Image 1 (spheres, rainbow, N blue to C red):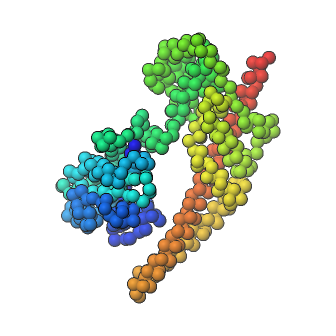
Image 2: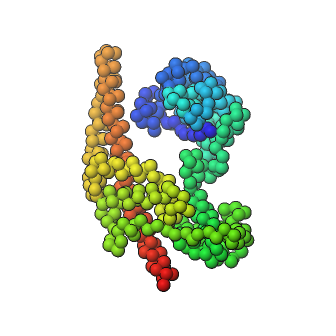
Image 3: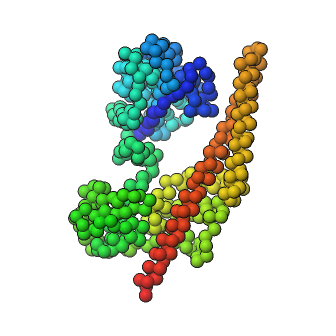
Length: 438
């Protein structure tokens, strides 16, 4: 199974910028150096130029730009094609990459194809595509369709080589469903569809199907008895017609699926109340403590890892959707624990300190850059470069911590609101269950 991606490369070709340290500001020369790094490509055994010589790829791409007077900010496009562990040999990986690049761009553009072997069995190709065509000098107009085309051609070539492809992962453009599916996740639409299936599977009649959806946080905008029933999903402004999920979700087919349950006697869905059980009637404290906030959230998400039929599920679809971000929240909880950050105020203070440190490190690196340019001898120049590399490593760590801290600061308010909403829904459900028991 090959996954793919494609993005712009901006920068000034005269400036050598550290690609690894700052991938958003990279020159054509630097991205080619990175893609063809001999440490990653087994001493350049797997580097191929299409419409250019591999050894002179940067030079030839620049010559094309100069020939047609196209020296814009976007100097190239950088793509990747990554394979499942152990699925391809280095030779197969490179051959698939070459064929993919030829079919996509071989008639108009210079392309460098490299195969990186530095990740053990996880082989992948890099594509460096010139932003200017050697045929007439037209510029590559980067659109969403180009990302989709790379994926489709890659799948086509992989099939011809007898390799698997990513099935059932439609590309929805701006919605990003393809990228979620590519990483093995579910979109909110997928979750709503699964919830409808679950409500049908545990329904004894049409009324219990409606009740099941209501208990999960949905509301009918158009009744199930309407020709085109629709539901309101928390967090979405527009209702969704059930039949938009496919032929199995029309009014008639849903009623038929429910009728089939008369022979199976499905158990009724119940919802676990982790927030309710943890806090009871007293006011939850997650609004005051970030650690309590993330501890509560992770407790709920981890309980969701088992099948809904085996473990009762949260009420709100919004909270169930957060399971997609479990790894991210674990990382953020570890961050708060390591730096002993309890409150939003402490987090804001920590961000200020990190930003000050980042500014100081960047200024220091700027000074080293000046020393490199004025170095009296090559030996002294290399010493400054070594110092710069060490400093860039420190900057990378601070930059990552700063990004994580800012993300927590932004996300925490939303998470508090979401848990408050879940708590309110659970209290309502609790009251409803008590009423049914009377």
